Length: 178
Image (tube, rainbow, N blue to C red; front, side, top):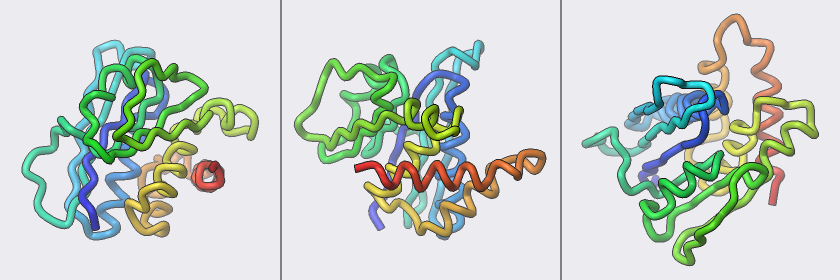
């Protein structure tokens, strides 16, 4: 398996830390070395936040991702902040409903998915992050699919377990996007 050094970024309230936690748990379920390092401002909801996630077969030297090979940007300020740091050959996924791409790089694979719009149209309000996760999985196969399902089940709090199936539907919707 290739090492994944990922940054998930957006506004507080978009589920950035949640989707990163799902990926981290999925990596654990696959038996990988994992790190999860959140970063957010004191205002949280509405402020900017990002989370570094590393998945590797080898021990991870630092949880801080400086040059990601995967960037998920759910708002324009996050895209602008991190796009120059992405390694050549990396994967960049943006929520095209909310992200205006002002700078394109020819040496990365830029994937636009209207995740917020898809979530609204399909009765999945608040699950744009998980729709993007489905597309990320399709593009990278960063873990086994059953590990991703287990990561969702582990990350959804016990009082909200009724939402696990809706999250899995959102992953499938993201995978269907071409």
